[in-house]
Image (cartoon, rainbow, N blue to C red):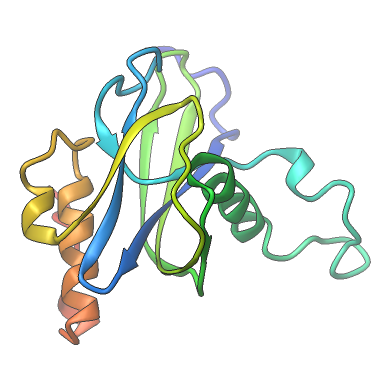
Length: 165
């Protein structure tokens, strides 16, 4: 596969949203190029519009651009507000068009709102970790949900690592 530019990456983020012991799963439209019909969690790509028209945090920088982007994606995709975003892990893959992509996976508590899906998603479920096993999830997502479930149950975060091989 040809990599278009070895220094540039598309940056995206996802949110494992929890409410009690349940996690929000959304089903991707069959029209989506990537993972059509698969179950996943809300998220999407960082866009320049997420920060360019806002005041810089310092003279030269914008802080919290990923957080701003992810909160926008959650609102657009499922109409929810969430609490504090906590970093879980990162995923890297090469898209079919040769562009490397980085996904930053976060988890956060549900705060408010009623789920209303956009056109990119066709269904949703609030599922426990055990129930999530019954869904056709995007590869690796079940392990991420299991990690969050253990964190929320108070297991030592230092011992929670995604399988590296």
